[in-house]
Image 1 (cartoon, one colour):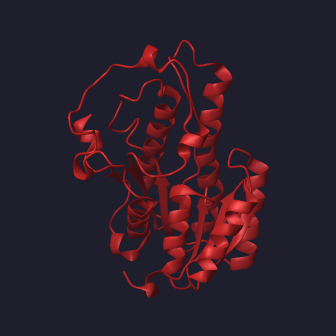
Image 2 (cartoon, helix red, strand yellow):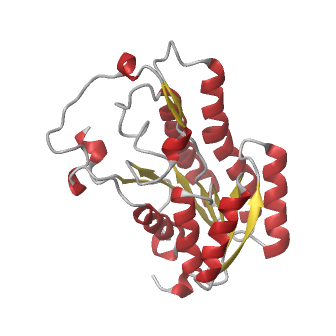
Length: 262
């Protein structure tokens, strides 16, 4: 792709302050998009914006909790008021939440994971699609290998359920949105070098684990090393670009073969 691929396009990325969201925002901005950086931590978002501007791009910070409808509506309306539209939407914000045996996973812990990962995705699409129907566009949802092709992470029932649901939404909406010339796809990363572990609470792993031993690590392509944020950002940029003009409703696993081995 060349810089002109996203020149003049308006993109919005949730969870843009760190990890995959930040990587996607930087990648889209480097290709010429104006990027709305949505999240809860203003200092992280401002840092992302500074890096974008250092690359010669531009964007704006949008403070919102993805699980709050009022905050999300205000963020989307503010973005469109400043930019005049929305062409690319990356629904990335999410948490690992609590991983524990199902009989020890408390209702409020389950609800928190669903609120951020699934309700947050719904609200992102709910408010984003309304802004994209007139001119079409591209949506990328960041799901996971968990719940879509891998089911061996101990105690991750809430997380896996939300990630499976995200992919189901993508495939359902691919048909619904096609008449509006909106494409929607999912990336499903495996182990990636991010800080998502910071919002992971693991309790009684042994109670939910079925041990499996792999002699050379469980990521064949990199001999056990996790993938990079940039690898996921490249895939997101491809799915958002005209190079993927005939791709919709598709999951793209980015895991170095991890989910096939498991």
